[in-house]
Length: 234
Image 1 (tube, one colour):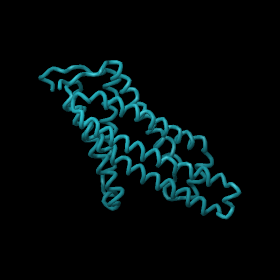
Image 2: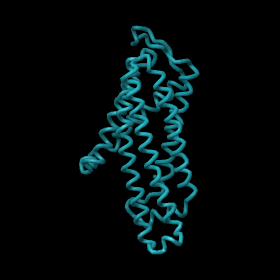
Image 3: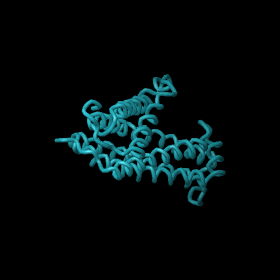
Image 4: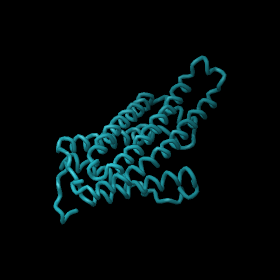
């Protein structure tokens, strides 16, 4: 089957949604929770969330926006790469949707701090130190759930990289960058979940290729769209 390049408007919509996924995700993880969680200090973390509840809730809303954008991205990529390899395109979409479902369920843990720290009467049996400890535990488990979801997203990025490489309507370099991003996601997440001691030995820059690859793909689609490339460029 001949590879069919997507319409420019479709390619640019995909790029815009992908960029939205990245921006919302970075705000939620770095701009919101990253600025409020104080290491392993439960009391300080609780005070930080209470003092900046609007920012914490904004991060939760950003998570939902990110997931909505990524559902759109997954659907559009499924159609975009169907002519490259229908089977791989469907399988990639399945891994992406599983990752989205895991992360959506994981987001429920972010409601635990808001419920606990509000100290409603039915939680009177729990002291403030206990509520603080459970709050930090919920945030830590949320981070573990994020790692689980990124294993599926990593596999998705690997497959997406292969599809981009084979497509003929996007640069092979972007395909290679996406495959590298997927490998980094998988290595980092499995190390965090299965071998924490090894994970602490990994370079803090291990995840840099994930941002580079995904931003490059999103901006290319947004700015240039996708078009048939010459045989020499394939």
